Length: 111
Image 1 (cartoon, one colour):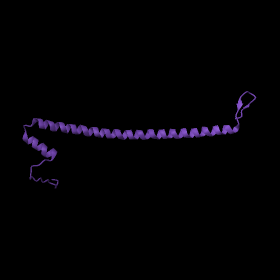
Image 2 (cartoon, helix red, strand yellow):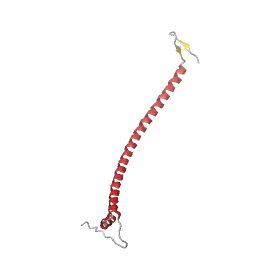
Image 3 (spheres, one colour):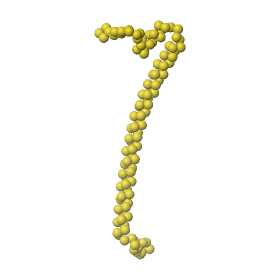
Image 4 (spheres, one colour):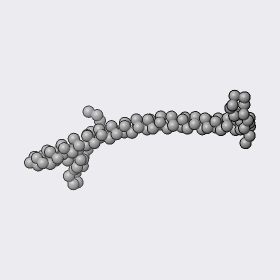
């Protein structure tokens, strides 16, 4: 590699070397730009995924709260245990229980 001394005391590089360095800088900048674009895209997609997962979480929490209330009602019903008619009605309404050989007819006329 040849270096030349200019009049001010600085070193001059051959033009061929300067072109190689310039190409390396351009390649590096393009790679850096591609990486930055990828990172921005990834952050946006993660934010969208996070928002969707938060929505699902709220739905699941509401479902759990509803089921806990239902379970507490059933537990209270079982703990009282003294009112057989109340237990029978709850079994029929909430659990769709019927007596053996019993047929249930529902009015579908809308009246």
